Amino acid sequence: MKSKNDPWNKLELKTYILLLCANSDSKRSKEEINLIKSKVDSMTFKKINKEFKKDSEEESLKKIDDNVQLHEFSYNELEELKSEMNEIFKSDKEYNSTERNIFRILDNILY
Image (cartoon, rainbow, N blue to C red):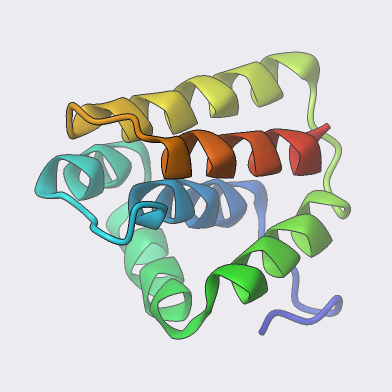
């Protein structure tokens, strides 16, 4: 787990959040992963994906919360992130209750 001495930068945090969104229904589609890869560089994706795969959902939410507290996000940055989260959720043509629940949790963490 990232310690407070080794926080994620904003791009790493965004990547981790988007991976959680893609995995929220316990099935990551090719469309979701390709969309995330289109938004971040390959090294960041590989690094964060490797860490993400080791974490439970509870650990993931804790890491996100810890790292969000370390960064100041502008209103526009938050709106862009929320838009990208929704894009991930809808990319596999399904937006189920589990995904909506994760969105609400993340929305609360981000604000």
